[in-house]
Image (cartoon, protein in one colour):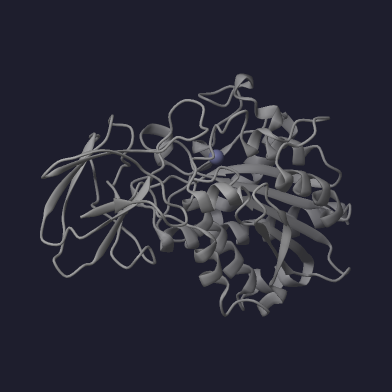
Length: 380
Ligand SMILES: [Zn+2]
């Protein structure tokens, strides 16, 4: 039997291996404090039942481990509910050569490549390179919508500023598909909106299987401090280009995240409220549009949004240095918001590829209404 994480997005720290049990833990690398991302494979265990033992109960999500038996192409949750526990068991099918386990549905550039196959060229969808990462990798940038100078507004979407927050990537896929769709939302966005997407911002972290969250000395989403030189080249490029991309026309920014692993507020979809009352008010307007346009299984209520000053959303969390905060201060920005997409449960509904994509489609429809009904009409 072999247990390892030697593949893109892989992460595990292996402890002792006994006859029926294996000690595993997240590999924290340069993370400050604890976090919970792990993603490993087991080969040669066919026919056996094994128990995977973690150091504590805060490392397995609300539906247990995510499981793949096709080399990481497709994933399912182990069950509908998984009470807090420091271990899970798995009975290995004798016919399956390799089984992967992860705390979320992993998403690396291979998944992005797979998604883009057959979509590039539609709706002007172009894949370009944002810049090279610190490790020399080419970081993808997607452009779509109205790419000539005739655009009247624009949208910038970033995801994976925290590498481990994979479920946000499926929401981004749904949003892109909505822009390409042959319906009123897609047509309007392609006619009016210049759209940029940085789908895998902390690209090194995504490919290396890092936590990304709370990276030392600070992570990507604390690299937007006013007047401070960016630490990460990709953040530097985003900061340099965002004002150019918007062309001083009205624009919306959305930064897609996942929250803590499970429990309480971490099992609902919500926006992180801006410290700036004007932007918080705009987030609430947008919230009502997202609620109205919501589709699929994931539930969302504007009342779940987290106002500034509540729970973890306080000044001490360094929120003045987030992407959303920085973007909200740039010329022409009409809405700048951070979304938290739970890992496994959203209002009791299952978070998976389909429900995330559906939610992303609803977000696109809400962006269209926000820009079309509120911004452009008011600015006309
Ligand atoms: Zn995050």
